[in-house]
Image (cartoon, rainbow, N blue to C red; front, side):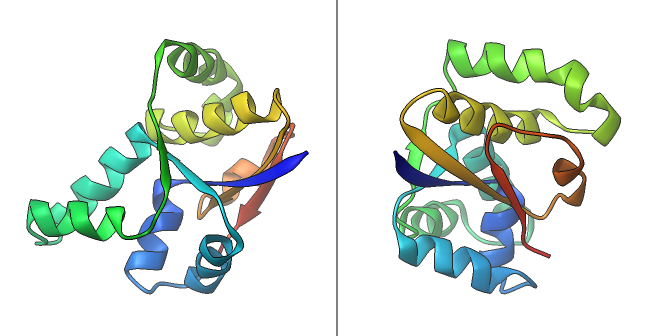
Length: 135
């Protein structure tokens, strides 16, 4: 079974903004394959631009990370929708559920995902994959 690191937008932003937990993301990036859903990519790009980074620079910054960007297709949309009830107690947003759905989908294949996030509440629920809270 191969391993993959699934990154939440909060994890990518912690790395890019040199916040607490950035070393854990740097280690994940150095270790190999890291996945990011297009929904989480949208969140990252939006936050970078909100902080004043020009759009082309924000795009280049994310591209330079070497992440495998996974399209949020109909199957992932359905998984994220089905997670809504389960994750309501932890206040999971659509972006949160997009990340969790990607990890859940990967765990049904020959991939052992590890999810990196700054969202401590995610660890309160049981998942078929490992959740690493970076701070």
